[in-house]
Length: 286
Image (cartoon, rainbow, N blue to C red; front, side, top):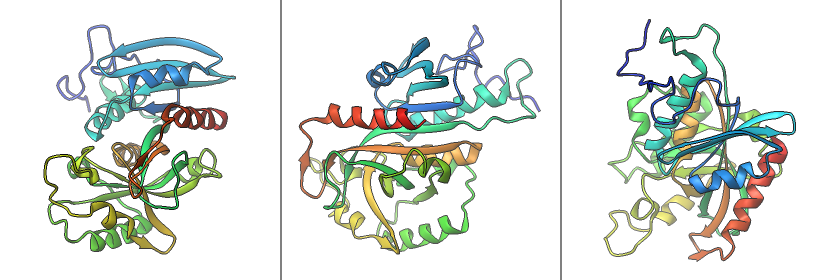
């Protein structure tokens, strides 16, 4: 069945609408970062850069780490942007742009987010590089997709919903990391549940001038525990990445550079150094 021109928009030059990329421009291993300026901080370690492209907040560099072809791409902030990026990355490898039909043989991408985050547990210090074993979405993205859970994911989500029962206006969703990526790229790292918030201030428990509707949100978050599982950190993309990767048949892992302690009200005085450490660790393991 053909995909309509309004459902999948292709630019006159044959590139996908937002990312401005052609089929073949991306590698099967993709590193995502939020900040467009961070793309160059990753690709500077490539042994060879094949090309650079950019449109809006979406900057892409593809090249080689040794003999391995790797793409680094900026997503911008939030799961609304993840919706764009992941659907368009999937289309680039799994849709024939000439016929507008899904290919008979599908490609599964390995997608690794390298991003910043704040810890919600007192025993996780700033400077930690943390791998998200699960993602818990507090945003609304997956209300619009059919999202099947494994039995383990469903059990954990049921406990989460009980714990957060007072938040009547939120319908959380939960997805596990790809196990293979978690135990290769994420080896030796602290693992934990990462919460993805739909904003930076009140949705992450910050108080500036506007009054928050949820009191002690950080306390509510860090008091959750089920067996070995606990919530470790907060950010704004991981849940969308994990859930859409699963829906579309890709593998995903989120690596978090911990720049803040939300329980100690501290922020790192060397954030770039921590992010660079995370980038190097990922590139050594891809």
